Length: 109
Image (cartoon, rainbow, N blue to C red; front, side, top):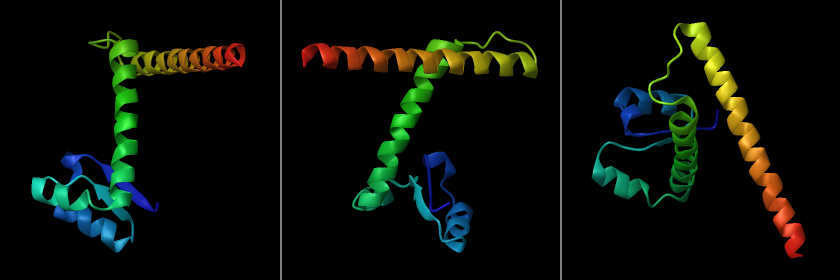
């Protein structure tokens, strides 16, 4: 692992020290607003934080639009099966959108 990125909830002296010991780039968003402003001057930090926000947005879509609130499955195995089916459904939706976009580009060309 060459870098680690997370939100403010993971920022702690212990985590910073551990990442430093393993020579892993620390892209954890600091809790202190002053430190956040300083870290935002680093291009690598910004790159990691931008990528993280895209992933969190996708997880939000998956969680809110596919799993539903609350997750109605009971027991670990049923919850696991529900998540697997929802991941498959989501991925098929993404693939269908990609195919539609390609077809629109072909028609426009």
